Length: 380
Ligand SMILES: *Cc1c(COP(=O)(O)O)cnc(C)c1O
Image (cartoon, rainbow, N blue to C red; front, side, top):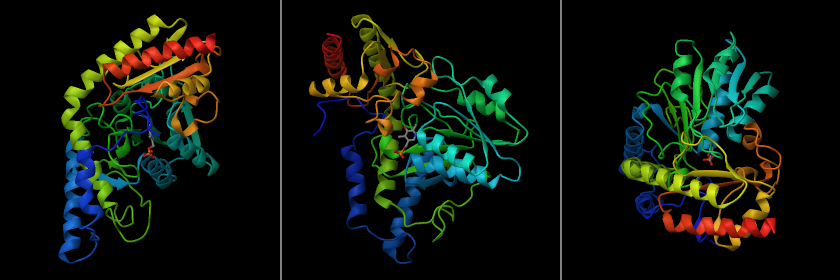
């Protein structure tokens, strides 16, 4: 069953018709393996390298700095486990934050099980990592710092450029999970001082199961999957050609439209937030008031349980999310809501609406009306 009003673009986005069309030839007629020597294979090789160029262009990087992966989780795992792993002779200390995606947090916990030391930085009430707190946490044996670009639950945009400057010249690898930011906010790898960046196609209207890892030139990149030597020997396996072509098309479209989509979503987000805060009693915004992802509205409703609220909202045709999609189904308060210390009467009522390129004012108005009705029922 599909949602009448889809307010969960941070969980995933729908494939654009243009993207589907770009992918189709590579699902059918153009099925050649890029590692073969005849013309059909060579054509696949060419289209893969063209896709790499298009992706690099969209984030202002060099094509050699783009490695195709199966998505955001893989890109995060690759850096946390293998980049930190390769530096174990220098040190075994990793720094991250308490509000990272589980793909980062669980990978860090895995590294702890191997004897690594991980510092999970606190964030402020808005979910911001403080550069000074990070500086104080640095040690002689710190080899990797991983701080996300934009938070998937509360939308807060982290001071990644400032953190990168702080780390410059210290020989510490800096990774950012930019899965929620790529295609949403401008990113220039030529200017942003990060060494590794994770992205995922299905968060910007591309297909699921494909993403990329940006790796700055000359940075260490141990092989993640050993085998046939694809991705310059770093990530073996016959390439997901259709997926990669779709990702390149989707990112090119997102980058090309960003100057229109982004300000429109920011206005819509502010309108949505203001109306919720004014028209529903005892409701508060989570995350930073303006340093936040364009389409993200996350609020806590006092004395209401988000799981019940989501069920009622769905009956009104609105699909939204409580916590992150990965941890839904469990009514536990999310680690992000915990980390920003939302008071206990409010925390269980935390709900996330994330808008995208198809969301208009009509959908927002209908969502506000549904929220007013459902909250009233639950408080009834
Ligand atoms: C969705 C998401 C991921 C995981 O990406 P997949 O491609 O679904 O594996 C990682 N980090 C963040 C911030 C995300 O929003």
